[in-house]
Length: 134
Length: 76
Image (cartoon, each protein chain N blue to C red):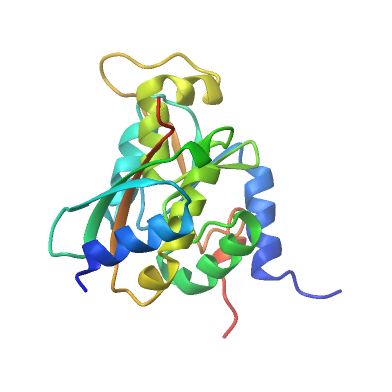
């Protein structure tokens, strides 16, 4: 059997995580202002989401997401297998109420609750995409 | 040409009839654009953003344009 490609792994991740964020850095330590904006918009909903740090394989992931979703910048939010957008779209949809509708939850009020699930490159269960063979 | 003007020209060229406002948010390479175009009518937000991004892709790829914040709208 042939080894799954990075594209296969990314597609699998998107299929397996109803809410998935590709970002620079981690939810605890976003490494870019736009990734931080995305996290700030999503976190208060308290929905479970997967977060994948793209920095370890930035250029390959740019190529692959370009092929899959015609989008080459990060962050990228996928909900139910579909690309929702980057930080600007996430923020706009948060403000308009569309994000709540998309996530199937009420728009949060008051203190954010968090239920994040971080995918790590070295976590054997969730890992695939970031392991790049050199 | 300053990147601000360059980006404006590229987007206007790629999206027919668009009104493009480019704002320098710092250092000349962190830009914010407001793009209004009737061409966007009927397109999803993500399709609208894809058009804007692809117009300036070359500048993003070279790293000349570091960050682009996009707001799109259809004229009333």
